[in-house]
Image 1 (spheres, rainbow, N blue to C red):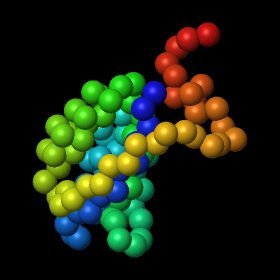
Image 2: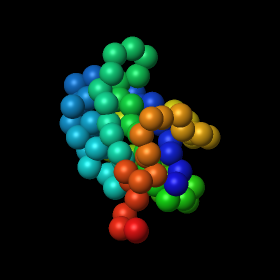
Image 3: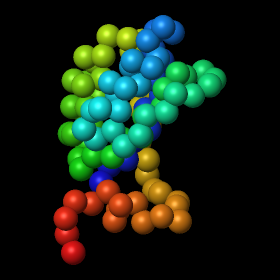
Image 4: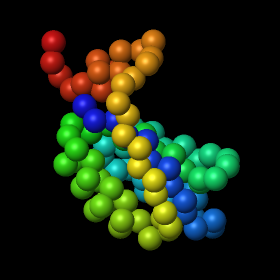
Length: 92
């Protein structure tokens, strides 16, 4: 699984609309409106780097309100939760 955090700047009057559009994209686990330098932070969980590339270059690019993004890849997770089990489909 590839996990990425995307920091997003959007047009000021379109934050809620953009956050809803981002959250609706397959592979977006969460989208947060935040204070500070960025307007929205999206947590992405996809199966491959190619899927991440499609999400960033095709899906996010289609949202006109997005002005700028910064994509960070996660190397390792430190969590009390079993994220692999939470986000796996089927399987026993």
